[in-house]
Length: 353
Image (cartoon, rainbow, N blue to C red; front, side, top):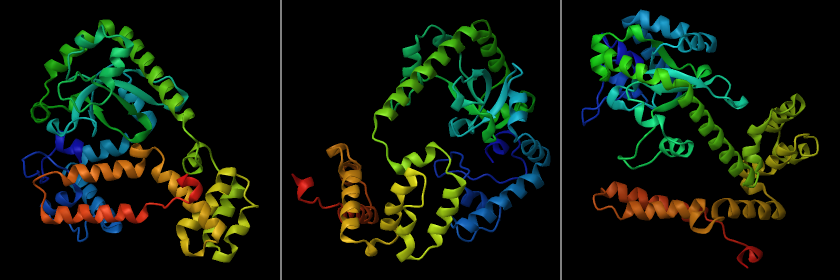
């Protein structure tokens, strides 16, 4: 929908927010185009509405629809973006003021194995000159998100070729589309010419910056205590344990814990008691209840003011101090406060000490 709105909007009604800015919310798209969507945010209703919107694009802009459908594969995307030429890229990473669309060029492919098929791309809306002489640390600082509107922001994004990115050749950017996204071919060409002689040097710094940020992220991750809930994403489960997992989900309550000894994966062995506590809390024995209460205590309260509950209550206090809240909003804040208090675990004597 974003790339259709930016490049070929004819034949489709496009909703706007009360402030006049563009919006592509599904319930608004269906409303202004007369498409059935009786229960917005109901899963099945949203699926049918999404299909209807896709049909709308196919009917009104069949060439764009067919093109985007045919370029969804990783190899096709890579073939388009790695020619050395600029291309049109539509993504939520770009602001709505420009219809989430700009012209970009590939700087290089990320080197880490986990980033296979992930490319660093430069937004040709911006003059690259200020970034050439930055150090690696300065690049990292400019790359990191900040609330400060005056902070220098590095116009480099990541594009994963296997995520069906909305990309198209620069030739589709006709004069009307250029006006809609506030970017003309002359600006694109000028910034490409500035970038070209220092492309390799700039890309090398960016790759060094990504490697340094990845190393810091890995160091932080490794220093954090491991938990089976998040470790489940660190590797595939064996076929035998997959079969047992299906049996566990279909088993009777009194048979549930008999599977613990049969599981091979230590992560699943640890998750099984939590599965029981989360789904059958009233069935826990005294020992199981004690273990579950201890887990909840640490999960919610470790870190004091920086704990999950600490941050939750602090945010509620900040919102409650706002002066323009409606009665309904204040009621919701009170309900959230009561909810937080209701799930707050009570420490046993050893934890209280």
